Image (tube, rainbow, N blue to C red; front, side, top):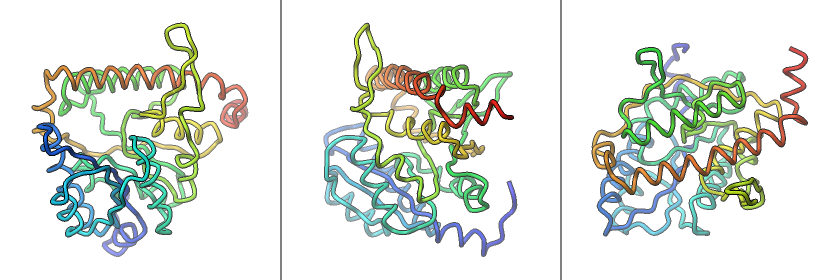
Length: 285
């Protein structure tokens, strides 16, 4: 990681837009925690100088007023659902004209200080998309010890499946993605309901859920785009870990995520790799 001057850092902040989505129910105990993380996230992002776009699905007026006071630009969710709202915020980020677009989950309040590390390779012209890598090696194996047990297990297993399938050691399960503005189209044009894979003996759509933030990355790789991982120092919020540890609902969410993503990315890779630019590049190396 190169050392940046203050002027160079400011150039990165000025040319990067942070995109996120929120929706917190005032009656939900878990959402009360997540809402506070999101407030901290927005405040951190705007304090650094990043333009910050929030697409909200119906949070309280008090929450929206507070993050607007911090400097967020807020848009009402146009279409319900995790993936449509994510596409909407990436589209609004694209529309700012900033050179770099970064999608980040709002609960990752401590990640903002690491964001510039993922922008630098784009800024230097060395990559088209960067996937942050928050894993550390403990006793010879990858860990994210600040995560709840079920989340850590799911993400490490999913990353293992990805690495063994493709030969690329990326922290592919990492939600945040930072990309050059022009590559936003890969996320904006993706529709997981139009892709099908076999599950439980029958053809089913990918779902347009978690796959919508992963499959476009795979397509970019197969198209020969420069997708790289960059190490970041990330510690998950302790309160979030404590709340989810041993929580059945949270554990099932992780299991469902695993069962959605692994069949989807396996299917997409196996169908497209044989005819991809990536295969041709590998064959000539």
